[in-house]
Image (cartoon, rainbow, N blue to C red; front, side, top):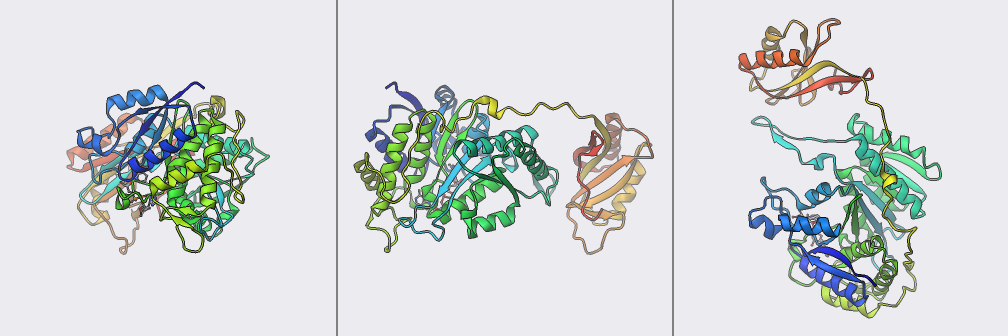
Length: 485
Ligand code: NAD
């Protein structure tokens, strides 16, 4: 059988131990893989690459188009970007697929029927990593949500559900608060759901959704959500299934794929041979399916299930009442190898096949819907100021003096709450003021009017830190009202 070249990164913390265990199992299963090592993470940061990825690693990954990666440690503090996020975004790996399954009664869980797949958007949201310190007291992280981004991930979730005989897709957002960003995600979900009438759909606000995952996870099948919410709920789901050490994930894009465990580098247990390699092993099973090696995927997963059934458990899932033998990382791998060719007796056995159940989607499936450009009309501007004063009336008076003839100060907010005109003395204010200017009467405004306003602010010694144009798109306002407006 022709060998598939796969890049692998040993990672940080427990990474080298669990990668060694997984590669040993795949070798014993005679998976036709030629491994191409890349170094990512801590060592690379320390050698001066703030991205955590050296140019030669990019070259290998872009050639192989498939990467099996152990977890990486992102150094705390500024100056370092997360390699994980950089890899996913630079390679266009827009879908993060995280199956979370209970293995009761062999792995203790209060939720024996838990069997869900979380499809998490991987390129946008607060993970765009666009952050700024704007004033003495305020830092900002930009939440970016795009229509093409939503369409790709929502369509992927529906296609995944269909291909894997799953009957329901639940969308989770916080659109009651973030009406434009999360509202767009939900709107796209509702539009695309009309193309998949064979699949049941529902929407939940993320807070009650997360609570229900923790309480009655068996009611969920496929969940589609944005980047941050997906990251959080998949850890909850994996943990209540038995351990964060059990779940693997696939990061899928049109040009490549990256497979990893959902957990981190677990520095607290690194180097002790006690980590559970199952998460990375399940990621490797997803990778074998992706590579068109369904028989090897089936062989490995069934040997792993049989090992769980035999009660051969690492410390994170070892419980006196259900486990038989407490093993370390390498002994667990040896037990899986000894079970190659076996199938589980009680747990549902794996049976992957080609090509229908491949999780890779044809590129047409992720094509975004063609849309005409909207008619965009400039109707005002929000200018954000770093101002150390405390009295909104005083700021309003200064701003009213400099407004150009075509625009008037309409509103001042502080942390999104209206403080002028007619604010409350009780509202606590910080040094970050949003000042909204609207046209006077029916006048139309142009970019030059905004430039004039900014220049006047500069001359008046006002420190503007950011501006946002207020636009209508086909007559619909593309901006939110202030709280209390
Ligand atoms: P973590 O997932 O590393 O650890 C959380 C807890 O789970 C710890 O108690 C740990 O011992 C335990 N745990 C994790 N994996 C385990 C396994 N395989 N077997 C047994 N127990 C396991 O989360 P953290 O401590 O918040 O993060 C540590 C580092 O990992 C951070 O630098 C973070 O940025 C990084 N991280 C990386 C990834 C990734 O590479 N994809 C994902 C998450 C976190």
